[in-house]
Image (cartoon, rainbow, N blue to C red; front, side, top):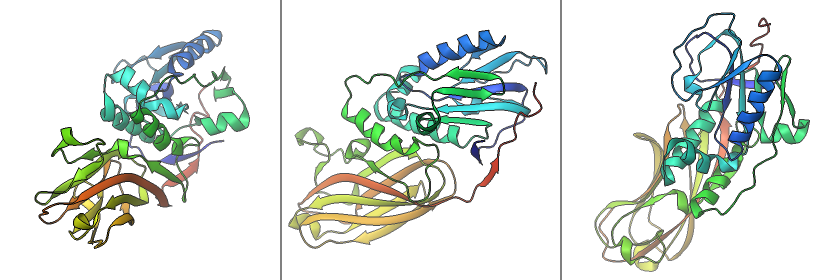
Length: 322
């Protein structure tokens, strides 16, 4: 029986069987196999990508499948299955399915992964669970499907590789306390000044007034206390000017001021308690005017210090549905 996290608020609906399948390179193959399994069990698989309003009542033989947990409307005793697999390919497939490009696709993929894993469910299928229990999966009582093998991954962009590394933390579902992973410098946005003159986007000329040097990645994290270790290097001219590190969501953040006062490579660690789901940002700001200097951002390492004390229950959803 899967342990679930009761977090995402859902209005009581009318769907008796729901599947949330997050975007991945194997998404289409999953849909094909689920449709075939539904036919074998005298069900009809309905794939939808918006807020489905149609209500067929309690004798419905349909299984509703979507990639966005906000669209399901489960009844009080509904069967709800979550399939969160091939997480390393979530961003490029989100781009295919939604049309979002670049960082927007990564942000959208992170939201779908986290919000799906926070959804109350009777069954959760992950890369980790498939590796430990095999590929034959019972999603509902009497309804099973053989999971497809992970799709082959072709050529990847730097951003695809960065998102794959970031999403690996969801391989086994919601990350446990102590989980760590990397955010590559490719996930962040940088001060646009003299952008065309740079060899590498993350290498910045600090000359100018106070401003944000680095910010992002605006991805979604599960609530909890998260520690971030920002890594960067500075030359001597830049190091004598003050920096502010901010870590949080919008105006809810923790900050730390520092003036390194020497050249070198630095790692600054800061933690913040996130009580809600939203786009998280690490911001590195220059706090004073600068006549010259060099700053290079190397990315960040995240660690979950303490997962939120969600109400965790052993799922009993769907026991009364025949």
